[in-house]
Length: 248
Ligand code: ADP
Ligand code: MG
Image (tube, rainbow, N blue to C red; front, side, top):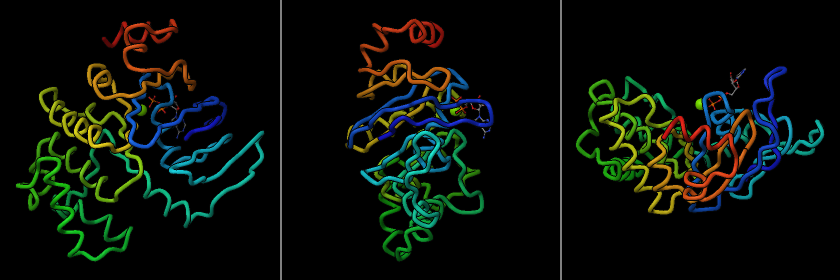
C-alpha cells in the first residue's frame, strides 16, 4: 500500500501525492513515459528511497510515516533491511553475479540474507530454476546465457527469497526482441499462480493480458487507474490517450 507518497530530488518533485494499493495476489502494471517517476516509485516500495511525505506498507508492515514534513514514525536501519527482503525486485539489467554459477546466484541471497542452510536451499533453488525453465543451466555461468535466460535467472533469484511482492522494472527493455516472449511467459505464469506483482513495462499487449489494474503515471502523479480494458481502450484522461497513441 502506497499512501500520499511524495518524493523530491532537490527542487525536482519526482513523486507527487502518489497513492495506490496492490492487493495480495494481484498484478498491477505501471505505465508512463520515461522520467514520470516509475522507477523511483518502485525504489520507495523496496525501501531503497526514503519518502518525504506519506507512507508505504508491505503486508501491513509500515517502514516510516511522514506528514507535513514531520517524521511520525520510522523503523531503524537493521529492521528496514529485514523488511526489504519482503520485496523482491527484478531490474532491466539482470545484475547477476558474473563469478557465480546460475545455481549459486539463486542460492546466494537465501543463505546470506535469510541465513538458511545451504543443502536445504539447493533443493529449493533447483525448483525455482525449473519454474523458469532453466533446470539444465544450473552449473552454467551467466556469460554463457542469453539475455532472456539471464533475466529468468534473476527472476528465480528474486523468488528464492519468497518475497510478499515482486517488483519488475522494465524487465524486458534490455532484451533483443526475440527474447522478450520467454521472459514475459515466466511473468505470466507467476501472475496466474497468485504471486503479487507490480510491473513497470512498455509491453502494452502483455499489460492487457496480465494486469488486474493499470496505473498510468505522468510527471510524478498518478493520472488514472483502472482495469486494462478501461485504461487501454477508453482512457478518461487526455494524457493517457496521448501516451497510448505513441506506444500502441
Ligand atoms: P522513470 O522510471 O519513469 O523513467 P525515474 O523514477 O527514473 O522515472 O525518474 C524520475 C525523475 O527523477 C527523472 O527526472 C530523473 O532524472 C529523476 N531522478 C531519478 N533518480 C534521481 C536521483 N537519484 N537524483 C536526482 N534525480 C533523480
Ligand atoms: Mg525507469
